[in-house]
Length: 136
Image (tube, rainbow, N blue to C red):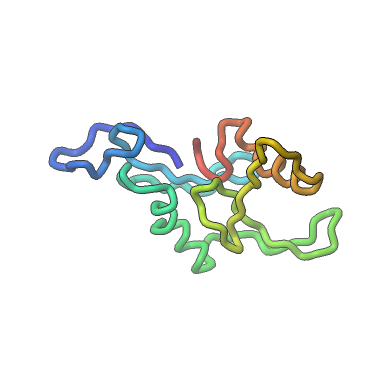
C-alpha cells in the first residue's frame, strides 16, 4: 500500500486525512516475482487502514471469485507436492489460503534453519524498496 499525498477535495472533511498526518489517497498494487505490476487499484481515502482497503478491494473480489487468473498449482523443481501460487503480503494483510506473510525475526533468538530460509525468501522484496505484494 502507498499513501499518495494530495490536496483534499473541498468539503471532504477528514476523509482523506491519514494516520501519518497528511491528506492522501491509497494505492494498492501487486507485483509478480519479477517486480512487474500485475494489479493496480487506486482511490481509497487516506483515513482507511491497509487491511480495510484490501477487505473491500476489487483485488480480493477477483481472488475470491477465481477471476484473477492465478496460475494453477505446480510441483516445484525439487519438490514432490503440488503447491498453489500465493500472494505474499505484509502484516497489514490477513492470513488466508492464498495470502502468506513472512515470519518476524525475533530480536533475541535465532530461527531454525527452515524458518530462517522462509523468512529470508519472503522478505527479499524489502531490499528493493518493495513491501512484498504492495508498493512501499
